[in-house]
Amino acid sequence: MRAREGDFLETIEGLIFDVKGLIHPPDRIVAYLRYFEDPSGGRVRYGRRYSKVYSLSDRDSILRVRYPRYIYYDHVFDDWMEGVPKNLIAKLYDPVEKVSILSRRDDLDILESQALMLIDTLRDFTGVSVSHIGISGSILVDLHSPYSDIDIVVYGKKNCFSIYDGLKNLLREGAMFSPYGLDDLRRLYEFRSKDTEIPLDEFCRIEARKVSQGKFLGRDFFVRFILDWGEVGESYGDRLYKRVGYARIKARVEDDSESIFTPCRYIVSDVEVLSGVSDVKPLIEVVSFRGRFCEQARRGEGIVAEGKVEKVIDRSGYEYYRLVVGGRPSDFIVSRGG
Image 1 (cartoon, rainbow, N blue to C red):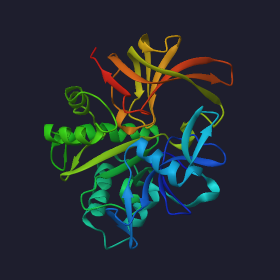
Image 2 (cartoon, one colour):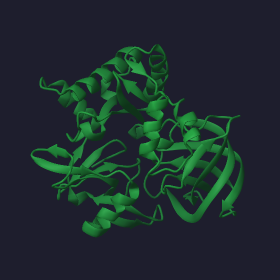
Image 3 (tube, rainbow, N blue to C red):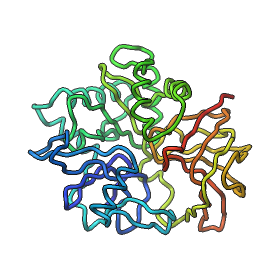
Image 4 (tube, helix red, strand yellow):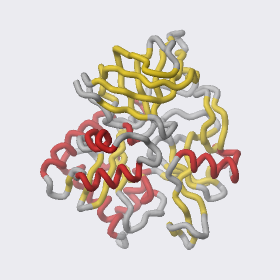
């Protein structure tokens, strides 16, 4: 069983998790709780009500109280994480397969129809085959509402850059696609500020220039760019990630070529520790497993970032440090211009 970012899975109890990252232990999938059965929940599927969980802290709290076996200590990542043992997985939801399923149906609701229309538009505009494009999020697990957004997944570096470049043009054209306006950004800020602390003006400045999000036919969309299986270049255990502490740093982005992907990565230089653990040389990258930190800074820009510091130990013996952003509400990446 293989699973990656964008996939969802359902456990034998009916819990629904979204898969995180591309590297997983042999016996389980790293995934975080997203939906659970709840008589007062606002989502309905197959006659059962579900609630959606947003913040990481709420996800952890629910599992620790009700389903503690889905929280485990991972010796490779040196942290307590959420993950589902493979023998407890009842179903794996594949975004590409979902496109195929919806394409064969003739009873689609408006959201499902618009999701397929978005994919067809991207295909026609870029030439990327729909075999490399999927539908994730609430549509994937049939728990969407009439007000849900459209979550798209694209696989493979070449395909991702093709669609990224295509979206730049489509958002400029202003026909079916449109970038977020100020009211949209304020609404997005209100939602995200519960889990990511950043000033409103900084948030709007950074989010306004992102290409992976916007509106399609007036509905919110987000495109997640994912490496294909043969592009990952790392297997579980090839590197050890040892927790060092937390820090706030100032640095310059040398390479942003992986900034559009989830997980995203920024190669940095001229690192200065502003607070927290200080013995972190060489700290060469800032990474995040959360889509909200994609496209956060560009090559040549200065950044201020806060997150967990990890020492990375490669099998070859090479060691370096990285900053991992997104585990706490206080984590952030903010660009400061060139």
